[in-house]
Image (cartoon, rainbow, N blue to C red; front, top):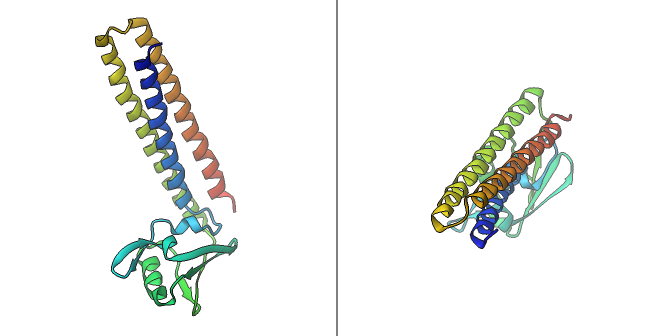
Length: 187
C-alpha cells in the first residue's frame, strides 16, 4: 500500500476519533442524577466585562452525589457566577452561602430521564453523521487516487478498509449510547 492510501486511512481514523471525542464531551454534559462538575461546562461568567469559563474563575467540586460547591477565587464575582448559572438554564438554582455557591441537584423524574435519554440519542446520531461525513470526505480523496496512477485493486482495498473503520466507529457510538442510557435510567 502506498503512502497516499495510508494517509487516507489515517485521515479517516483521525476524523472519526475526533467525532467520538466530541460525543464523549457532549454526553458528559447530560446529567444522570449524580452531581458532576462537568454539568457546569459551558457556563460563561461575566468576569470584568469578559465572558469567561466558570472553571477559570472558581473551584468546582462535588462533596457528595447530590451537591456541587462553587468557590470563586474572588468573592466579588459570586453574584456574577450565580447569574451565569441561572442564565444557562440548567434546571437548578444555586444557593448563596456567603463565600460559596451550593447547588443541590434534584433527583430526576422518570419523564426527565426519558427526555435526557432522547437528548443523548440525538447527540449519538450527530456523531454518526459526522463519522459518515468523514468517510465520505476520505472516499472522495480515495477515488482521486485512481487519477494518480494507484492500482484499482489497491483503491478497492483502501475503500473496504475505510468502510470497516467506519463500521467500527458507528458500533462504538452505539456502545457509548447504551452505556449512557443505562447510566441515565438507573435510579
